[in-house]
Image 1 (cartoon, rainbow, N blue to C red):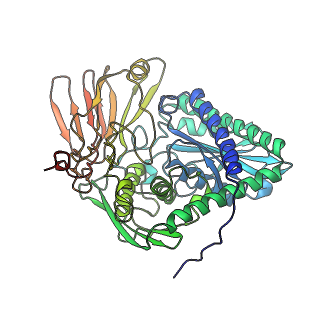
Image 2: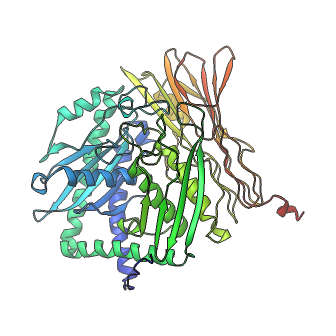
Length: 541
């Protein structure tokens, strides 16, 4: 059925730019405060956090340029507030907290959202929102994320939508409940309080904006921004030929065993609308590689923006032309109580499948080879070096980006739906009883081609005391990044555990809760990206 085509609408491009940047500047200031004020290395050094602004109806106004997959949790959290609380029960000075993938729109338990309603003239007009990845919220393993977990109940504390601040008064009992369920309670207390304070910055700035221009003008600007993004994206979709374009990608295993899991997508372009249909994707996995709804939605919106209009203002409008079809009980729409802790790596493979499908419809100069498409993690747990208690150190390691028509793939970067920084070796060694023995590019790991895939990263961390526990996982230990148009595959990942006496054990599945004593090491090499075109084109053979 042909979709209804909306009549064209005129927009003032300068006005759109001014308001888009005003809202973005608020989220930038919130984000900088969140990073600079946080206590944990995961937020203050690695920037594993995101901020966003929503209107009183729960529609996205803007998300800062942080981590694309976090958009799903922020949207889901605001929607959960509006679904679970009557408007008369939401008061000025309140703030809400949540993380649960099944009850509160979260995507995995370590991502805790703080959502602050903003009132103007006694009316709920906005939400200031932020999310921080907390290094541990309890559960079966340090870090609360491990592919081998088989239930959401093993992934730490589940937080439905609760009021953490009531009319300006912080509920210390909720903070205590969360902190006592973490292996590093002090970090939880301090980071949560920073998150609450971060939204207060957004609240002040939004009220100031309404004071300056008038609330009616600001709300009209929001309507226009959303309509502008929708109109602009629909135009990009109209420029594509109608049709159904298919892609698929595989996850190394289900988190427990070695059988690959298949993600299949059929992308239907029709008029000015686009549908992502994941029918045919494998049933939900036994392990923690399943993808909750909000994470899948955010991933699809990311691909649309990245491939069709990278400068598209990130707001509710970019979702309106998009329909997502996913059958319940599958890898991309699991049923409760499926584990979802490693959803980010699976989302990367969704991107791989979508990029593959778009290769059939986009101009060749806009096509990319597959990237590392994973979210490799190294997690260490043990006695603190600088204070009482235990630490949980979490690191996600980048890989190689896929090559394109005009450029080699970037080396050693986070790709697609993740965007965290590395933890510098100096900060790691000051903070924890660990040492970075190797941190380098994996030479030659990118796929060959007319342009070459990016190289992965080698990272080896040594325990400097006895009694350290470690987890590690990396997608791509068995499934390499494919090249396009004759380009070569990138190298697969490598994961090794070495003891102080020189014994080395190779793994082709995740490492869970292994004991490290002084001198033992954990080695990870992440995958390289795929190449673009045949290398023979360079020599004219």
